Amino acid sequence: MRRSIRFSRGLTALALSGALVAGGAACGGSAAAGARGQGGGAASDGVAVARVLGHAEQADALRAQAVHAAARAALPEAEPSPTTSAERQRFAKTRFVANAGLAAGATYQWIVKPYQQGKFRKGASGRTFTLIKAALAGAFAYNRLKAAVGNAQADPLLSKALAPLTAGIESLKEMGTKLRKGEVGDADISSFQNVINGVKDAGKSAGAPVKDQVPSVSELGG
Image 1 (cartoon, rainbow, N blue to C red):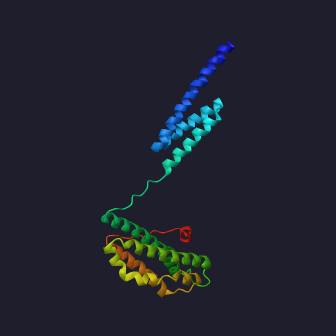
Image 2 (image 1 turned 180 degrees about the vertical axis):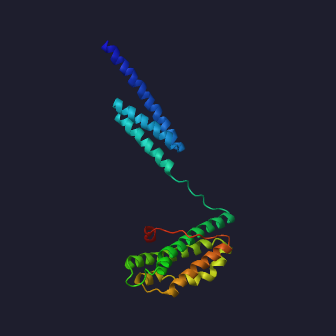
Image 3 (image 1 turned 90 degrees about the vertical axis):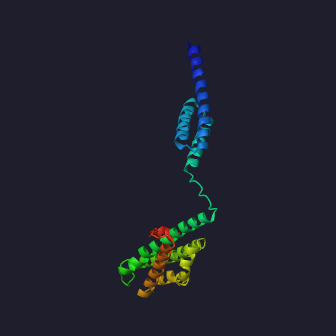
């Protein structure tokens, strides 16, 4: 009777081992196809069975397959590179809108708004930290505006619309330092706003309207 039971258990173990191999193959196929749910589920079931039977190596292999499948599924699709002239222009406008929007959002949220609220004044609560954030925003906005001008070079109409603003953008280069020291006044803030508004107008005239995109404080320093 005991021999019969052992023989039966042996057959069960053999059958389950076969299922593990099939499950591992299915998981590998799922990983290649990028199907996270099916690959991960099959591997998880296989790992559980393998642990019961004491097949540590098979469990580790299936676990690795599950991780691989999840990693592949999480990867974003590669953005195709523009090839035709029309595609390059659309791509340029998209990048321009993104960079100009970040410059505009940073300028208003971290420079114009606190200035209008009197937070740059001496004795204002939290003035030091406010000026630090404003300085970071000033440098950030300048860099994003320069990037936006670079993006526009691939679109003749947009590049032409931005050409008159080049000097104004360049004048903002040292604004971050002035903001950090609290040495800005109405004229400086107006100058910053005028440049941002000019960039927005240029984008709109070239079919690339810009909307404010407010970056976080951590993004300002990034």
